[in-house]
Structure formats: structure tokens, C-alpha cells
Image (tube, rainbow, N blue to C red; front, side, top):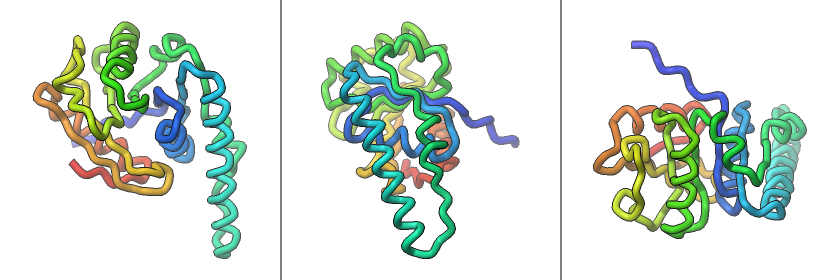
Length: 188
């Protein structure tokens, strides 16, 4: 059985503590990342934080005598910050939602996503405390999966993956395969 082609473009919604770090993981893997947030200052800070994280990685590689593999400019070019979520939803092959832990905020994001993304696009939420499967409503709940990254996401390899009562098995499988393809260790 052939593996399904993995996405080359990712949408990360929420550029705060977790979102910027998740976006960094995908950009370091060579993927284009649309990083969306409603706050332009948060987006600017996210890009600065990614750059600082990458500088730290590069310094660690250099001090350990390892060959430097981190090209900061190349990685940063793959991160596309935007305050206009609806302008990038049609480009997303998979979505990672990382807004703050509020059912209302997450529902607002889900509503906008469902209005614009194809029905087969996976929505992976980084929630760690909410039961989104019971507390939110989606037109296509079969594509919602929780993908809880450990902090800092660009360093810690573990990501918890959990489907809900309506989540289709192939959504969990595709999410796990995708996370593995960027160097993460998903735990279902």
C-alpha cells in the first residue's frame, strides 16, 4: 500500500506561545506555513521568536562541532504571517489550530475554517484541556482531531493525538504520518 502524499503547505492558526513554535517545526521541515493571528503585534513577535529559536539551534550546532544545518533565512522565508485568516484557508492542506484555551475562540476559528476549507482538510487542535468533541460544533466533525504538542514544540518531539467519537480513523492515521514526517513522535 502506497503512502498518501504528505501536505506541503500548512496553516497554523494562533501565533502565540505554541503556534509560533509549531509553525517553526513545519518550516524547518521545508514546508510553507501560513501563520495566522488576528493580532499583528503577536505575528511580529512570533517571527522574532522563531528567529531567536533558530539562532539558538544554530549556536548549539556550532558549539557541538556538528555541521550547521539550520539556514535561518530559508526557514523564515517559509513562514507567511497574516492577520487575514480567510485569505489563506483555501491554500491549507492541513490546519493546526493553536489559539488560546477558550471554547468560544476555537469555535470562531472552526466556523471560519469550515466556511473556506475543503471538506477533506484535517483540522488538528492543540487543545490540552478542552473536550472539543463535546464542546464545539462542526459541519464535518469527522475531520477534527486533537494534536496536543508539548512545549516547546520545536524541541520536544512528543505530540498526543486523539480522535473523537466522530473522527474518521484515516484522519488520525494521516495526522500521525504527517507528524512523523516532520520528525515528531506522535502518541495516539
